[in-house]
Length: 293
Image (cartoon, rainbow, N blue to C red; front, side, top):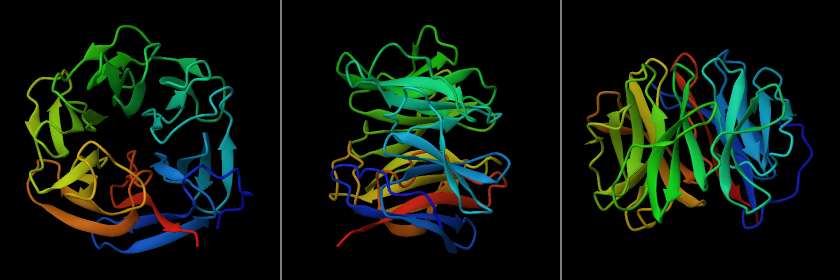
């Protein structure tokens, strides 16, 4: 179980956070730890030994063998949200940090072992979601001139490239393991659905067609399956992914097609925002929640 003392409670999220894994084949759930405060969005490290999650503006590592959490030193980046992504070699982590000057989200990188943040996206708001397998490019959702679209930028900074140009929210871009595609979610069909495009933004294809709102597609390391989180139609606005809702984690083939429900849970925001597949593609890590009485 987690051994950190409770930090300050986030406003509006009076919850117990339950860090879990699920077997992608059988659906068997395993509770790793319960936290008496908000944690979100576990990444699985490539060595299979740790999870990385955010809590109240900071990042933490959770050791799977000992159950011990440790804070990742991040310098001035102490308002990080649940958009953190590990570099392919796990030497770096990229975050969306809400800057002190204007409160807007910008993307920074710093060593996973801890260190000083380096700014990647001067323009804001920018919300990180993907790191290319070759380590060179970040993919993110950004609001520019009142529209939310998907962009890429060199990891060391530079000129951003706009990949989508559809009305409404385009969000959650994440690379396939072979780097050929970017998976994302978009409301352009009327509901939030999962889409896929080539890494250069061409050939944007809808991949889910069910009567629900689906977010944050995550491709397994072997490329065989895609996990995503789904809200019931009518339970949320198509462009919203709030907390404290009955949601599902679903799986579909990496080639598209029919889905199956892997987990039903109370959660939403914070449950599956980042790619949390285990390195062997057998399990997913996620967070479910329980309201405090």
